[in-house]
Image 1 (cartoon, rainbow, N blue to C red):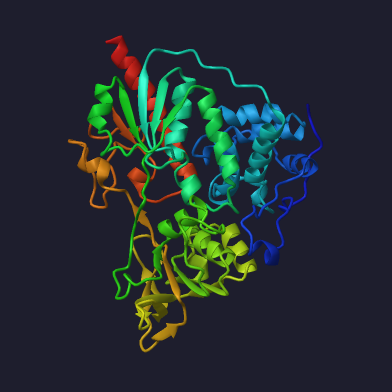
Image 2 (cartoon, rainbow, N blue to C red):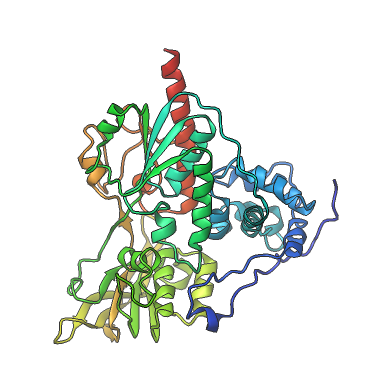
Length: 468
């Protein structure tokens, strides 16, 4: 049914908590569209014939089709279209960098703002969760078994697609809860854990088994999984090994990796009174890095009661790799950006605790291999930043456990598993890999895209093998 188009050049603003209120609580910042907002925003979509937004979606959601359903107020129909391609729509609607992917290709963005695709995806997923009580239909079993290592976004996506195709899927997760980076890395104020759990429950409802506290490489090896009757293994174990700068003072009390800091807060609830995994309540915090993880750590430190929180980044504001929305939210909450700044030493007091960070100012020189201008030290610019806590958010790499216990599994110099590219096949027959375990730290949606591609390849591999 044709609807009257909304030709407003601006997308409907997202309602949010007041910055001065939210900076001291862990409740979700973005409050979500109302029903009327969602319908009105959906009417901004031109339903382009070539669907450029879809080609930029790593999991290939039919974006114009689901938005058209929203415009026609068929919310369940919109959800079913999304669910054909994505196992985690409520997650993606919140944390996917749509502005660099689907929304960047939106035709409406040429002479105004793109359609709020991510906001609409979130609305549809939330509407379904709140209104649909019908259990999903169980897929018809095909008699084949696949093991998934890691219950993060990549593993969950692969598991969902394989389960829908009839496979008996078992996920082995090292932590005591499923979700991977969705539960230990992304803060509650960006992604409520009840949302993640509901998405996981949806997978369990279609037959996916999840075994927690299973450290593959210690409890079981990849070879032992094959001995148990699994016909293929997908490694989606992420990249949880933090990197440091190797500068003097990094071993001091009060220096954290962002992984540890966020895991204690997000997974272990260190901010709650009486927590068994307490974390330092700092007054002045420096977070080194400029990505989404750095923003998450800085904004979490503010919510833990810090008086001053700095983002220390060696390039400028224009080069920050974090999502624009996350940078804006951080600025609104009072995070101080010390760009073109690089730490060279962590200073300590007599008790061996952090009491400052020696830094140098930087300036941008010629572009490096990444295409970004290389930061170089400005002579005579050394100064001390007064902080009592330092959080390193400069990236992560895969844990070496799986590669060290799986003969024939090739990895590169950074410890990432080598695959043939598109379908995730590794150097071991029947073993596939994707997500951060292959690329190093990247986005949730790219990890999901890798899981989706590998699931398709695994299905083809097992079918071909069964046919002889």
